[in-house]
Length: 215
Image (cartoon, rainbow, N blue to C red; front, side):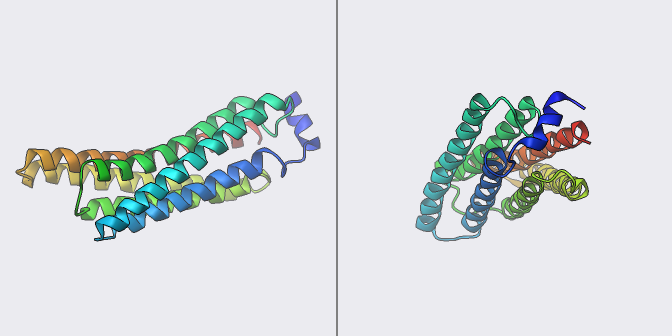
C-alpha cells in the first residue's frame, strides 16, 4: 500500500475533492439535459437561449476544474493519486467542452432541423453523463467498487451505441445527401456529439484506473 493510500484514511473525504467531482457530474447532467431539449425543439429562439445557458454551464465546469487544480496545489495529502485527480478533472472538463461544442456548432452552422441521429446521440449523451455522475458520487467510498464498475460498463456500452449511430448516419449522408454544404454541417455536428460520448468513456477509463490502484 502506498504512503498516499495510508494517509487517505485520515483525510476528510467530503470537504475537498469529492464534492467538487460531484458538482462536476451534476453540471454535466444539466448540460446534457439542455442539449437534449435543444435538439428536440423546433423553436429557433429557444434553441439560441439554450445554447447561451450551455455556454454558461461550460464556464461553471471550467471553474470547478480550476478549483480542483487549486486544491491539488494546496494539499499534500490527497484521497488518491494526484495524477489521477488531474486526469479525472481534465476528462470531465473535456465532456463539458464537447457538449457545449455540439450546441455551438448547431448555432454556428444554422442547423434548423436536427436529424434523428442527432436526437438519438444526444439522448445517449444524457444517459452517459448520468452514469458518470453516479460513479463520481460512489467514488468517495471506494468500498462500493461494484457500483462504480457497473457505471463504467454502462458508459462504455452507451459509447458503443453512439459510435454505431454516428457511423450509420455518416454513411447515409454520403449515400443520400446531395447538398455538400449540408452534408458537412451535419457531419460536424454529429462528430461533436459522438466525441462527447467518447470523452465520457475517457472518464470511465480514469475511474477504472483509480479502482485498480486502490483495490
